[in-house]
Length: 265
Image (cartoon, rainbow, N blue to C red; front, top):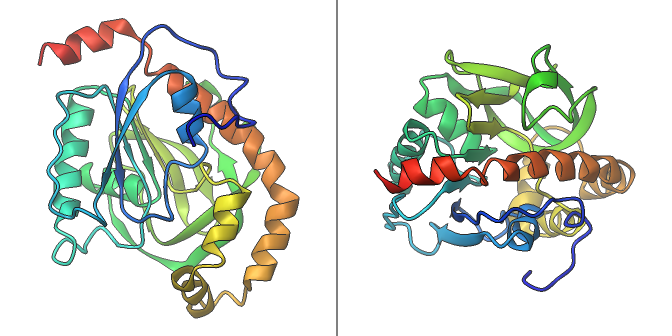
């Protein structure tokens, strides 16, 4: 996506401090999405670790200033089949201990919650498609998720969920699955939902055999056509929320004091 102008880029203020961002990726169909052009527009450097291609990768954090952990079809208890999940948990623990900006999306948020000792397990019913996300009483004061100032539909695709970790702050909930977003400390955010998806990625998921079978087997009685129609109606509002929320998170990458602390470790 280098060199492609994206509608979310123009609202992000530039910052002279550039970060190296480590991104943990699990499957080709779940990339950074909207976050990729926003990061590149600010000059931040992205390094993907693609565990689907290199499941034995052992990246280190010492050359990076931020960590993003993306979604994927595996679950947090699949470490026997996917040993890289243990590697990811160690990286998440190290990043949070170092007060490094961290963002976990879907599986990434579940791994964060697991590292923090919260219960992570199957939902009573999966959430696939558009579901209402509700702010909590502390959301207006959060430096990243404060743009969620009212209940709003967001795109979901998950069978497992998590309780809010005991030392974290609950920032969003859904009526069906409870905790949907949390902040741990001052720099780590976990989102169960997929704000990073644009229409192209959602449509891509709905054409891939794995996602189509997962939807058909979910028991939700939804079709790809249903989700495409909902997306056409609801995505513009979600893109505005994504622009504001991700713009706020990107501001966490630009504090030179944090660079000095991390560089001395």
